[in-house]
Length: 407
Length: 192
Image (cartoon, rainbow over all chains, first blue to last red; front, top):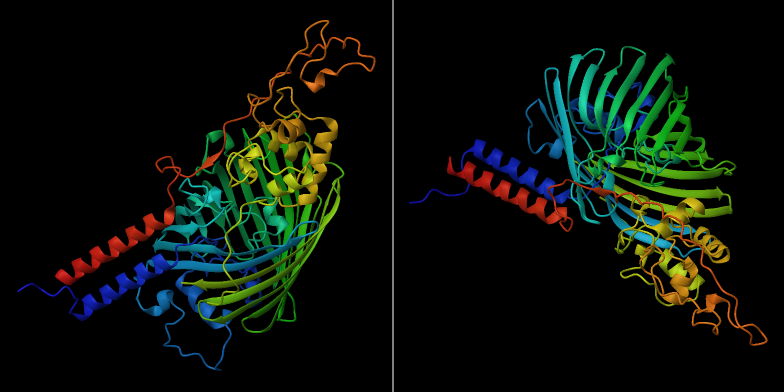
């Protein structure tokens, strides 16, 4: 008589549930997305990203501490006292108890996008903006992390398949060693986010797109050293190139770094610097040097619901035997959390990066983000931008509605 | 998870540009196949890192055409027409190639055949010869200047891993892999 194919013992059943949960999660998350980084967590006295994220500069997979903290301070509470035995905030809703060294995560983000640029027809899209599965392990000082996802369109710089659309993407994969857990002294190697400025989730802000330092698809392969003793945190990365684009002439080499200091409780000020060279820039089709240098600040104001964030950078692109494109780009953001889980954000941005004489472009965002339940949040953005160039000025209005689920 | 509104096809970057060009120059078709993006881009996907065609290079670097901002394109087209730009250096202007000759302005090997008038004869078929004089006399000799050396465009940028094929998409492969792995592990657990 053949043995039943169904698991019988309790151990087997737990393992089987784990297999099903992981398989379902992976299949359900086959869309590309970016990891989240909530820089307004300075409100809760978290000046460094280390306790919550394995990536010392923020973003990416959450540590068990980060998950617990998210349940406590991120999501809207509907009861006065949380059930301490509840596992709903844990990975896979606590269906599976992961071994301590192992961390799992994932993001699924859907977006409705509506844009009206002056002089053009309105453009409306619904897209699966993000779907990534993340995994990490930390054994003593050794740590490693990786992600894989699916991009319906774009994100070519992170693609690992070669189709014009519907590609597999891998935004980050790295391994490293933490020499000192208290100060976070660590070295990592692999494909990582560039350490520069405020690692904000709004990857289309000009301060991120014009410096090419967003957490969307601007990751590079390199070696990074990080340290966060006391009131300081810093990371320096040697950029070896993006090996997911070819040929080698298009890859950048250089460095990126930041240093942040908290001179006062709740106030962090920092500086960033980036320099790269590539034999062929895909935009100018010429050998190009690129630089970005700037300052940033985060302030958890004395009024606890309000956090202010700001950054200003000088950006330069210098194609060989061609005009320099340079200018200043910056943003200022106010995050108001009237009650736990609901964020009202007002953001202003501006830049004059371009050829000599390029007029300023400016923009205003009014955003609402609500972490209404563990693992879920929604976000709405209304964006007005006035784009200036040598031919005049063009206005653009954009509306975004996002639904986000993280594993 | 809350999602909003109806599904629409994901659009490519600046997918209104081919239509905008046709509308601006009052033509119904473009001299390239597909969606018309290959006038400027290597593929119909578009994007700034796919702008490896002579006309695209000209629009972006000379006239600073901005992605999805149609007014910057129409301004550039006016300049191209007025200044008689010839992006691929084949002797036919970009405007002539797109509107009149139906040839590719990004391909120096794609252009009309130029008729050089014979010495002392009437004007040839090419209207750019200058035509007959008002009194019906012999047209002047036209000497075409030597063609300027063309700029060499670099190899196109591509993404992904070298082992994967250009036409592969990721979703089916990964889904099957995960499903197969899950079933195999389930079966192994069940046999214990």
